[in-house]
Amino acid sequence: MKFHEILRITLSQLISLSLLIHLNILNFIHHPPSHLPSIHNFVSKTPRKNTFIFHFTKLNLVILITVVHTNICYDFIFFCFLKFLLLLHRVVCISFGTIHHVFHDFCAASYIFE
Image (cartoon, rainbow, N blue to C red; front, side, top):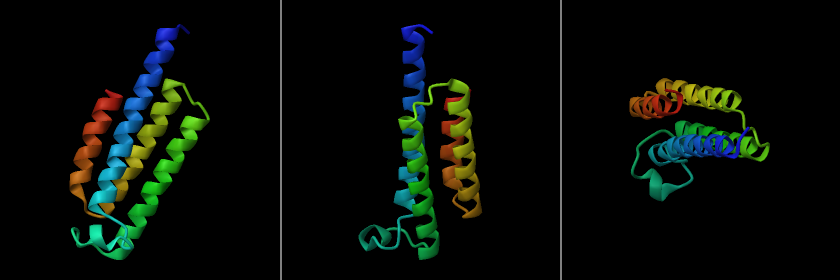
């Protein structure tokens, strides 16, 4: 594998990670945990939903950090893993009725997996 091919894979992974983290930040803003009252005032959601999505977001970030630290550099494995996370994220968003996140997922998935 040539150097520019390694660089291409690394850049594609960074773009994918930034998109997925962006989705998690959107989740955190729109569905903040109940122990942050200053943010919680802007969104009227139940504490149970907020706590669940907050822990789901933390889980995603822990998985992403693990992926980076274990140096998974293979396109197929990495993108299949991201596709799985995006699908899981979409299922959670649909189950909670937050349709606008499905649009974000669709845009990110179209960009990453086209």
